[in-house]
Length: 193
Image 1 (cartoon, one colour):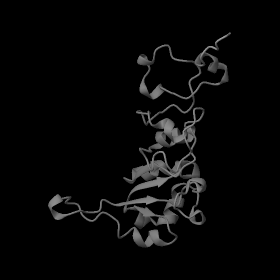
Image 2 (cartoon, rainbow, N blue to C red; image 1 turned 90 degrees about the vertical axis):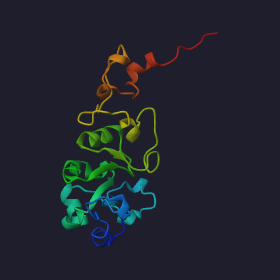
Image 3 (cartoon, rainbow, N blue to C red; image 1 turned 180 degrees about the horizontal axis):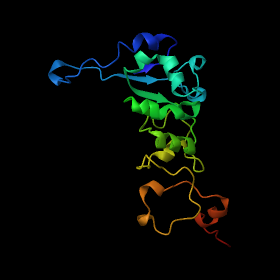
Image 4 (cartoon, rainbow, N blue to C red; image 1 turned 120 degrees about the horizontal axis):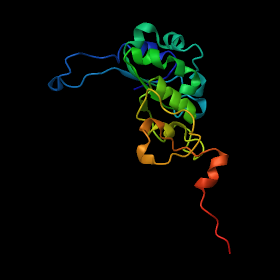
């Protein structure tokens, strides 16, 4: 795993690229490629990463190429980034190059995380750490954990409660609380004296 330090990625990525193709366990360990973490991370969920080097990617994949270098990016096998930092539009380009996109160091809302999954995100880095906490009204990245259909996860809560959860497909299941007009049916009745 490579953590972002200004200028180091362009020097280190060639070293951490895949080391061979045989993948023979008797030959010892081999590098499968680099896992890059940063600099496209949320400044409020930076962890050990220096906030002064964190950047966003308003121009999508071209910002990744400018940051890492096109020759160096071929050595990456996984990229951890916060989808809300502009990188979301680059996810299809990232995965088309055989790089796993992982959501991490993120303040992403449920909707942003769902859109990242729909675009091709398949992993979460530092689950339960370096991301907004689980909240019953906005589960954030945790809300997409149950999504099994990554091509079209639900991005908004359903407008009405399903009649039977057993007949609902996994891609339409949404455990987020309903809007205020539907919350009364979810609350326990009050006891009167």
